[in-house]
Amino acid sequence: MALDSPNTGIVDYRLMALSYGKDFQEAGGSVITSFEASDITLAAESPAGSAEGMKYPIIIKSSKGEEVRSRFVLACGGLYSDRLSEISGCSPEPRIVPFRGDYLVLKPEKNYLVNGNIYPVPNPRFPFLGVHFTPRMDGSVWLGPNAVLAFKREGYKLFDFNAQDFINALSYSGLQRLVMKNIVYGMGELYRGVFTSAQVRILQKFIPELSPSDVIRGPSGVRAQALDADGNLVDDFVFDSGKGELSNRVLHVRNAPSPAATSSLAIAEMVADELEKRFLL
Image (cartoon, rainbow, N blue to C red; front, side, top):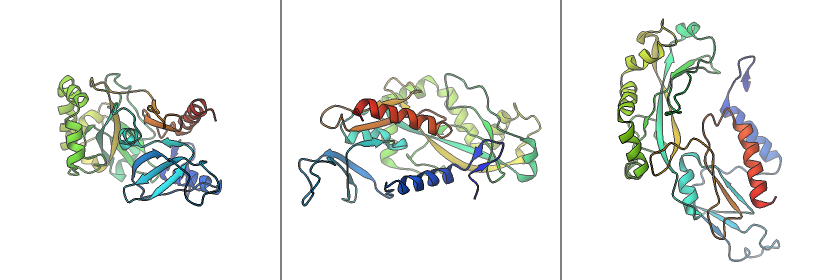
């Protein structure tokens, strides 16, 4: 299966990620899934029967009691980047607040209306807002998204709910201040998420011929938005090693601003440079 659509710049990001994972394994690495990290500590002594001493002093434990040992840790936890940072002794801020973006999809017979990517000039006050038109590898065209608070860190559906995530978000002073400063914008985003016609009215600024009957409800995505305690959207990279014994072996990428997937190779190069600088590799 092709990874890209020639001459369009459109890629199948899932297949691309799987391809990189295969390259990593062929280079001697291991890919472990279904491993919920619950603790990151520095070992006090070598594992029993180990001939390599303290070559791998970092212990990462899962919620199921499994362990992985390593020399260094690079954590890019996305929606859980703040929680991963905290379990290794870092500051609880900036906090991750999940925002769900709901898309519409053009009906196939209307795909001729969009010949390529269409993006608005972003509002600097709300860099994650702004509808756009995105042709996909399968030939479909996504329109949107809006941006509303998700009630679960992985709340990809309207009624997904997690009490811990919800209370954690609402009790955070950063979110409270963001809402108070931008309540009108927030209500508008929520309205567009409920009423398709409201979303279409925004889209018509770019394609006037578009009508509500031309679209159907599509998938949703969740953005890991970093917020500081004053309610400011963190729009730059945030690296953190914390303090103490883990600080010279653990690096957290606590925020990678959009478009992180589009810029993934350039971001990877920057993160690698940060690792080399911090850990003298």
